Length: 294
Picture 1 (cartoon, rainbow, N blue to C red):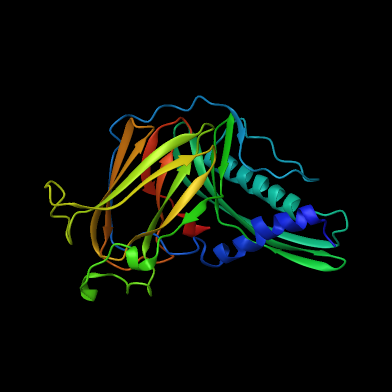
Picture 2 (picture 1 turned 30 degrees about the horizontal axis):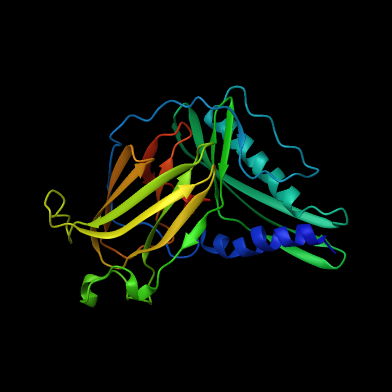
């Protein structure tokens, strides 16, 4: 059978993640079928100057590919696919493994900060003399330049009791039934090789956002997150109430970004999740990441 160390790894990083693969984003769906716009950060996003490789790359017999010297979109996608395939194989590997299969998908997110954001997801299995292991994972978010690789996949999910989630006493004003439907959520990712503190505030601006410039907005949620390099948090419990929200994020008490979040309809697993992102250069942005495409 697989060794205890590998079996424990598969249980915590593989089997637990199979639940996430079924819906790509897992847990409560994030986003909205209603369009929304992003207010740019109040300070410019700095250029990326860090170098190296950061992330949870599992040791094993499969070697990892070299970063492309000319990081075009297609070259980076191929590099990320090969890196994620090697990582998955190494996570499944045991000396007595008799059979295995790994399939990986990637999609280009966007070019920014002098590099490319690419999303990757792998699935597969391995057979051993007395055991079988299936592999699944939440999509990994990569950022790659000619000198830098950053991989973020793992995040902690945080919940509050469903009766404490922001909602209207009038069921018709909610996009989902309290404690029955899925509430809205967001993620915070640190795609930077240093630890950072991110403060996030969510304000309700009314059904149509009429309170955006007034003092009548209502604070729905306030959270502080201290994130290690390549770490993330998923805040599961934000709101059941349809309407327009303002998401404010502050990085280390200085850089601020805002986002107008329109939640007129029930969130679905197909909606790109809202992500507060500490960029590879230590800047801050809020945007939707199309994790559901992989």
